[in-house]
Structures are given as structure tokens and as C-alpha cells.
Image (cartoon, one colour):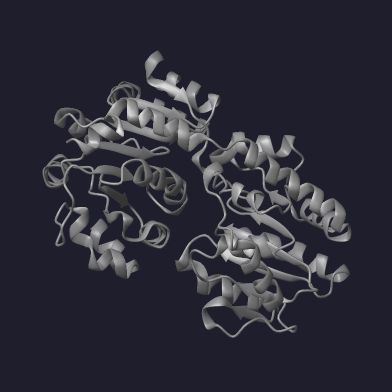
Length: 411
């Protein structure tokens, strides 16, 4: 039923359903490093690590699995044919055995919080080392896993190495049952996703298309219910900044049309990226209804709000706007990025807003004073630069568990 439901919702899932049950029509490289990244956020975090793997071990094939079609699209766009992509097999023993026989992975790198009992146990039995990299564990997830404490402890012990994003994450894995020598702190891989050199030029071109003299507020990765809460704040800002353009980028593609209707229903003249007609002065809202464009639009904006945070979704990647040097707003629900948000708050690069009043007050302050806006943005950018290095530290762990590059070449 799950396959049927996903197929009805998404064409890619419908056409490639057989991969979820371990049947693959095309060739899969054997003796590959298997990297699993569930969706867009994890896939983006995997990019610097996979690129480092390909550079250090150019003869080593890499298979990347994702759970979602948007994750698959991210892998294809960012990594191209340097890796082989397929969908993650269901966590059932007979399906996993079929996959493991086909790929015979040299090792499995799981991104963030992917604790699949049968996957881990099957890898253990097959002698496949498993590393949980860029690992995080929120208080909410810890409480959930604790409900199945004996099973959770056994699952965690099937992981060879846990490379945690921060000390709080490491401590939670210890609480879950990880052994003392099993966990280390490497930092977040997302600090290492460096914007392309051409991004500044791309942003300048985009800014001219959107309106070079207009203030632009970017609402990125918004979730169901958030846009309605923020529209009042946007209207109040337009009382002072009449030419303000709000750019809305919903997190999930299946909400694009819904959000378009919401914006038009609120009286906005709407332009849509997918229609390719540009943005005229009379447009007050712009819908970014495409994947893979978020960073470019952040770079062209004056202020970014990072979604999934005004309502209890847990927040999304605040490092993207920080990396391009713009001030950041987010709501109070940021448990997916708790430590990173605290770092940005401490640096004076991010402000937490609880409602429309907070949003308006912060946005007004930054829109009125371009010098202050630039200072705040540069603080975030400096913090990103300061904390890079997780990829190198993670590569050291991979080499320790899978062998040095020379060993790979000699296999």
C-alpha cells in the first residue's frame, strides 16, 4: 500500500517503485561505498562528503540512496554521474539481503538520524561497516527512541562509529546506549557546502530580474500553516516599504499550487518561477516553485526567514542564508538545528521571532538600516567560515574504518 500511495503522489516513485523492494533494472556497481541520505537536507549535507570521497578515492564507486524523489533530484543535480543513485530499499530482511548481494558495499554511511534496525543488523551480519555521519539526535527523537529502549540500544550498538554534529547530539546518543568509544564529535557537514564562485554574479543577475531597488524578503522552506501566519507581517511591512517583494519557497513541491492560491487569495499579484515570465514592478509576491534554486534566491534577498520553525516542525537549514551573508529570522521551533541556531544567535546573525509582531520589528530594523543589515549578514558568514572542517574530520573516520585510499586501489 505504501508503494501504491507514493506512486499516486509522485511520478518518480511510481516509475521506480521496484527499487524500494530491491529490484534494479540497471547496473549497480559492486564493492561500492553506500551513502544513504533520506531527503533534500541530508542529500545537501552529503554533497561535500561524497565529493571528498571521489577526490580521495577516484577508483571507488559510490552508490547514493534516498527515500524521497526530491532527495533523488538533489543527488542528480549536485553529484551527477559521479555516483549511482537508487531508492533506499525497505527495511525488511529479505529485501535488504537482495540489495546487499547486488551491491556488496564496502561500507555504509548513514546521514543524520537514520536508525533502521534491519538495515543495521543485515550490514552487521554481512560484515559491512556502518558509520552514522553528520549525526544528530533531537530531544524529541531521544524520547521516542527511549520508548523502545532495549531495541534502541541494540540498534545503536550495531553502528561502528557515530560522528555527531555537536556535543549535545553525542550526549544523547550515549543516553540511547552508545558505547564510550563509539561516538565522536566532528561538526556539521553543512558548514562545508561552499557556495559556487559564480553565485555572487548569479545573485546580481537575479536581483535585477526581481527589482534591484526593491526590498526583498525571502521565506525559505516554509511548511503548511506558516505562510498564513506570515502574510499579516508582510502586509504590515508593505505599509512602510510599498515596493517590498516577498519570495516564498515552500519546502515540498506538492504544496506549490496550494501556496500560490493562498498568496493570490490574500490579494497579491503573483509571479511564479515555473512560468518563466520574470517579475514585474506590479508583482508583490514571487513563488519559487522549483527545487535547487533556494541558495541563489537567498543570495539575492535582503532578509531570510527559514521555515519549519514558527510551527513545531523543527526548522530547516539556517546555514544556507548564513553562507551568503544575509540576516536570518526563524521561529522558536528549531530542534533540528538547535546548536547551530544557538551559535548564530550568539554571533548576532540570527533573531528568533515568535509571532507577526516580532517578525515586523526585526525586519523593519534591518530594512531601514542597510549598514546594520550588512553587519548582521557578515557575522553569519564569518561563523560559517570559522566552523568548516567536518568533512575532513569525517573522512579521517571513514579511512580508519574502511581503509586508506591505497588499500582501495589495491582491492
